[in-house]
Amino acid sequence: MLIVPVMQILDPPTVLLLEDEPMVRDLAARELERAGYRVVAARDGVEALLLAESEPVIDLVVADVMLPRLGGPEFVRVLRSRRPEVPALFISGYAEDPLGEPGAWRSGDAFLPKPFTLRRLADAAAAVLGAPRAV
Image (cartoon, rainbow, N blue to C red; front, side, top):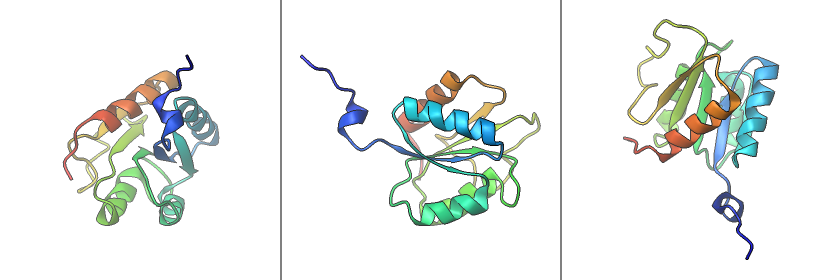
């Protein structure tokens, strides 16, 4: 009997990943893909807004808080004005309150401090996607 993971039968969830550090972005994208997600990666929020226009479905945003041009919380606020259902996993190496942006943080979202293991990133993404969320 062949057992196939559910994510291989159905369309995999799409993750929009925002990270300005190329090595971190590449490693995170590979780990999320290995965990069964389809990943669309951007260097900052401006690039992510352009990518989001051509994506019919975004199941999760994984966004660094501090990005050039348009940061993660600001991007999520703009995206949610068009797609209020999209949950977010924010990542940052800064200890201060990184989510002060109004409209960015809500129930069901999560914050993962850097540094983190790649496995922890995949686990956090799965937890956010499995969490009940308020729209």
